[in-house]
Length: 499
Image (cartoon, rainbow, N blue to C red):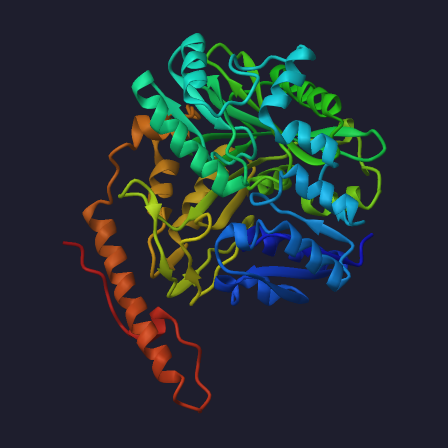
């Protein structure tokens, strides 16, 4: 096992990796941009080194600087987390050339699956069902226009490198194509350092089902069952769960074995996710391989009892998988809600500023993967994900009720989040019945607004946060020992009047 690992990321995933390293007795090196100097991952790591200015290309996408820091600090391996350089084949090659272990697939496999087009080509050749669409990337509008007409509108414009919904656009007509191409290329360039794009046929009202896979360096491959990720906004998942209500044992086995074939065809090792779309007729289509740990990996950890981040490190260090496919099983039901710094009443635009106060929910089978704390600033430079709330229950309804209670007790003051919105999704009748497709939010929450009672409640909490901040400022000038302040013990006796 490694003695020291550099984490080439930030936020909640950097914290998650650091905690796994601590449990394995591995020393950690954090890297950070100037705007992240007080971030939680910086505080938790054994050593933290400044990368540079806030823009990603000058910090978290700076390959030369990250590798130099790894060598200077004596790190043996680099964990990329998700996003940034996590699916960058050039970064993996540089690690290999410099004698560093990349905790993920090798550069050959990464180049294949990280390039969505090459991956599609390989899977089609292996008779794995793929979504109709292009098999070459394009950067000329005229060519893109011809391909769109061949495929037939609506089409889905996608970034060839990376994932997470970055650069993705639904295009319903030729009039929309040029703007979609230009904005999609800009976003892909910013997120992954690669602006190449391609088109697929847009399948209407599918379910998004993905299979978690582990492959070691000794030829062993297993899947750890599925996650359903159909609740999305702008192609970004916000609620994930396992198991999927859409799969029976037969279909689960069929798709799971296909996912393992995808990994074997790719020569892939370490943790990865094979994503599929499931149409109304229960036909499934290979979508892509996410060559990294997924944001939603805790859902799988809850239903299987396996720590995926630790498995990543063990595989990268050369250990064989400690279990076979027959030894794996799903138990109960898990649901994850992503907590973003966004305003759901204003088209989910980022909400920036200082977080005045955080109270995370606790209780049996409640987990928070978080990168925030009271007083931290939310920056404009990076993805607005703050934390992930994950719950487990004996069955889906038990998990759903536990999530509802947890969301009720999740308080973040100072910026806007979509916690009130998530509550309404969890309580929606169609969600309760498991009728979730990728257009769920569009169909049921396109014009969602807070009701008056919820708005009054938030206003009261914000007032409490303001008093809390004032009292904190006062306390800094008082040397005597004080009881820690919260909005609740600062504001004193109060009640909320509903009008």
